[in-house]
Amino acid sequence: MQEKIAALKANIQSVVLGKSGPVDLMLTTLLAGGHLLLEDVPGIGKTLLARALAKSLDGLFHRIQFTSDLIPADITGGSLFDPKEQRFSFVPGPIFANILLADEINRTTPRTQSAMLEAMSERQVSCDGVSHPLPDPFMVIATENPIEFEGTYPLPESQLDRFLLRISLGYPDRGSELEILRQHQDGEPVEHLKAIVSLDDIRQMRESARQVRVAEELRAYIIDIVESTRRGEELQVGVSPRGAIALLRAAQAAALVAGRDFVIPDDIKRLAVPVLAHRVVPNQTFQTDRRAMVEELIGRLVERITVPV
Image (cartoon, rainbow, N blue to C red; front, top):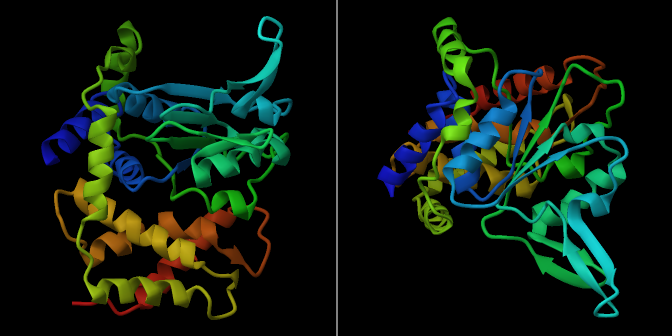
């Protein structure tokens, strides 16, 4: 199992250069059975990261470019009349994929954004009273641009809560960027990636992640962190029990990605900000850099909690 995880990581990093941290977090999200929100400026490699993962899996990949005129049926599919059969039948939309890239998800209206909620939570789509299960595994990788506000619709808290992690990529270091220029001189390197793990492999990895051992002291450590967000004056809404479960699942998956069958305190501490910061609501409304403020606050709260030895 560890050999396959290492091979998957190496395959992705062969085209996503200088981003070992974000790659680890993406694999953590995948093995925890969650969804990932990539929030960063254009041109950083958000789409590349999603495509590299999809190319490395022997599964179905779809990309949806979110725009203001998109409607829910464009994503989920709907019933169409078949004149030959003289009846309505369900035609699946692009959400029926193993890896779904929801590009610039905040550019579509709240009504269309809400079409993703059932799929992300229940792994199914309902149409005309009938539920249609999504493929297994199913993972949404959504992107959004944090510096452009014209023509965008901020994701509501209920939808943000469906993402296991929210991360940024940041700019590559100089050496990595030089190598990026060399790789792209003759085309797109991601197009040459081969699938190296099957969907059965991913399902087995997810089952292994759930078997990763978590000491009782570490479960209490997670609750201490979560409870700290519900006290004090800085936050209007703290982390819910769903957020605590998300931190537990993410820590288990991160331990497996790191080659361990047990969680350590550093797993929880490192993941607290990307797992929890988008699940809280500050008391004050900040027009700019609200994310940075909330992430700094969560970081301070975590530092105050005694780490179990």
